[in-house]
Image 1: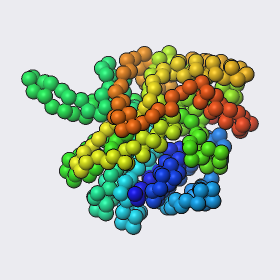
Image 2: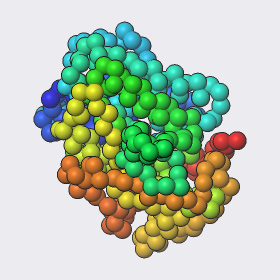
Image 3: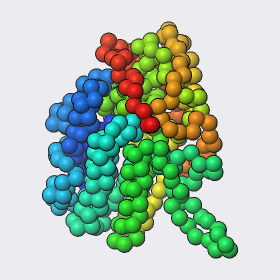
Image 4: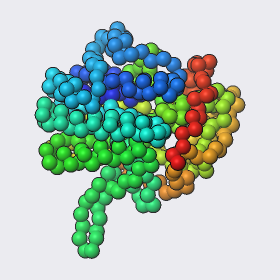
Length: 382
């Protein structure tokens, strides 16, 4: 298949490109280096440097003999996305191309405006690009489990059947964002559902939990092909951040009571989920939603797990509760359905002590590059 990956320079975009290229697909990746620019502006950097896309695709060709094409441009620019869509005419499109950090979106007005403009205009242009130049293209959109919030009822897989005054109907599951970033993801879903109904586009929306890890089947043994490992408060996901803190001898920073519970998944499972969604496309006019995670952990549970494995490896690991900078429930119900991808054949890589130790060992090789000043940046929701 011809597969277009938007946001192909990112933490998940580049591994997805390698995975689909290795599977035999023709892959074109697009990015505007927004994440790299924001990291520079906020004085945060990944644990080790990552080559630009030109060098990455060159390395991939040298190592595997396979080709990935790359184009640099802004998806909020209609002339750019229309030229890409018209020239490539993809069978499937994977949309990662958004400002991905909830803390950044809550930083200040400028960051909020950038998040809205980038995320919503990119999605709108993708929809119009598909309609005008590739109407059979299947859009695979990365949403987030954070769209649902923490309701006091079970979280269903995207949809909820309601009985009201003797009548029944099916609606998108009620969502309640915890940040402006998550609000843009909700608005993405609403736009996609509108145009699925009106223009019969094909959409799979993957409500993904936080992803951990770096090594995939495609980059194993080739660290020069690894993706970004951010560990700062802005762009670093909680488990990756805890692992780097443990290696640095810095207390694991648990926000508030630490009872916040979410669904997590290994980066290898993210890639498999994307491939499964592409292999079995949504029907015309269908917005298909899968909850994309394999295990649930509380923040306290993750901290305890990292501390236990780290101590077994000779690290001195402490856990410290700090004032929660976010507005969120710290003790809540969290039962979420996630059977759709399992039914398609997903075989999860669960977070065993051995897998966690592998990630810790990788980070230990770069211990001298850790900057403790990046762990806390004092970004408060209110």
